[in-house]
Length: 61
Image 1 (cartoon, one colour):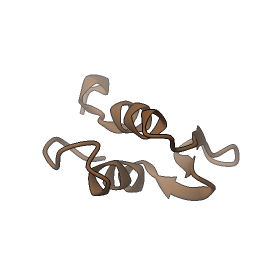
Image 2: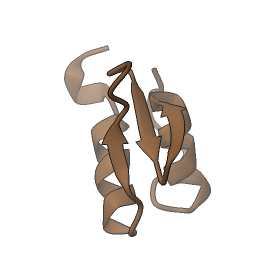
Image 3: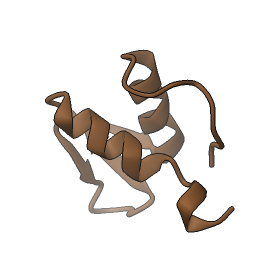
Image 4: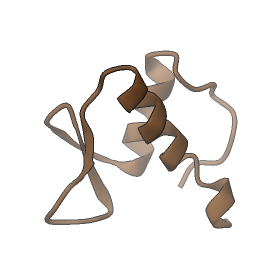
């Protein structure tokens, strides 16, 4: 997968715009902290889709 195919940056941007607090998890940069909950990139994308910020199409990591 190329970097342009990764939906994570869009999910982060959409969640922040919706009022979520999103940041990289310090102990492991592959993880994210979303409103205090530690998530993988796939879980972060799932959260954005669950709340209707992203559609269900596109590649997942």
